[in-house]
Figure 1 (tube, rainbow over the protein chains, first blue to last red):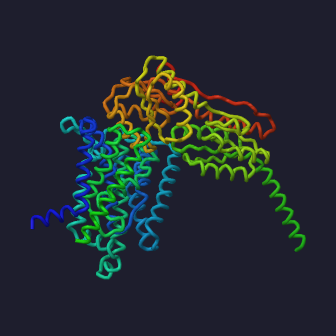
Figure 2: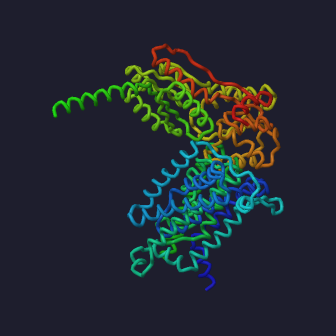
Figure 3: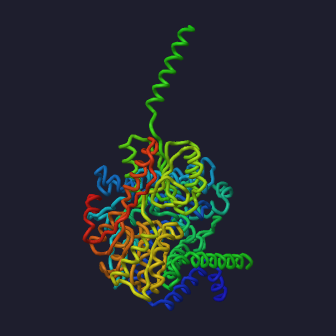
Length: 325
Length: 308
């Protein structure tokens, strides 16, 4: 009995990702003792949660059989619009953020409506939205990056404040990431909506036949994904004191890779928040570790691409074995 | 009724003729290989727009974000529309040989800016010599005793493989290679948060003896990166491009030792002025070089320009 439990655990996609993550940590630590230094850990944990927050939304969307290529553009759009309102319209930060998030939710809703009501594939809709939103952001700023919020504000502290745990400097974004991950884990695994999401991704027609409001769920997921991308963008812009119209460039591909490496199926029906968290850590640690082991600067992507490919092969083998058994 | 139609036709033709007369304005195409939100190209764009307004000409400005295929399409479209002049960058030698020939066949003057390719037979050039820029940075570090044989120099760049990186690296190599100084070109990307992250990771992982910022975005990020990894200003010597307010401030505060100023707004303004003169029938067969090194002692005019 115990034996079969271990076997079942080993066949889970998250387990293989976790084992590879552990191997990567051990390898990089041995290769360079600075890998676990407080400075490197602080640096790693500054950027990681921002991508992680987007990845959480993407996990739910992929589980429902859709994906969103506009998240990188929304990542730039939300802080740029908010900071434009603060700097040029004299609106306070809180109100500007509400407007920014409202517009971000509208983008998500538009994505969802086009996909569900017009029946256009999410690839085409969100690709168009990526261009549209990125273009609007560039036009609104004329290409100029905006100085982000520099004054004292409770919102700034809540979103991008930092604190020390020992010698490691952590940002508020890690708490946001942890809290949102817990919420998404609950939604996907223990709520009725989570069941609906998995059912829609597995077999939409069967789900609709059982009374699942598939269109409403998908529209909601597009809105949540956009909002999370906007939140990550706001956090990032406050952290680096700059709201740039080109921020988030190609984040959509990085985030999809994180989610898939974690074990969520690109074809829908199977999603895992724990796997996504592992995937986020794994990809960021690989990118960080590659630099630390002294790979030549122009060869980083060779190793990152190779490792991701190996990861996907491991997943494929594990998945096939679990189907056979 | 017939009289009415003749009168209407005459009025229409008169209005058309006067409209055509009113629209007899020079039209120029300005095509950049850069990205519209790059600090350098933002200032370049402002300079070009200013020239177009002051000289009362119509300018069609486009960027191609480092994609030569996009720029080639734009350049050929510009030639096909037979404008009064074209300004373009030549990010890679030999890219526009046929296009320059075609433009000249159609009687369209063509001025290169920012990156040159004199072999094409272009009418004039406005900008810096990128190979020379690389040599200036390398010589600055060597001449001031900031690097020596066996040292390692970190060279972040936004778009590895782009011609600016190649030409600057060639210039740097011509100084460093004979002296046995090592250098590593590192892909930092174009996303601001990603640039800071990657540069920080590299500085944590490696003991670097100097930094040469090969582009304006990476140069503008130096101060944030140093603060991020807890390095004091001047802890590692830094040189690079200085065509942004952030870098000028970093020079003033001691994070960057010396930077190169390319007069980006002038690189936008002068090609339009040259094209206007060419379109008005004046010869323009001369080049205009725009390059100046500045350091802590000479940064103030640049900061004043940015309206510190």
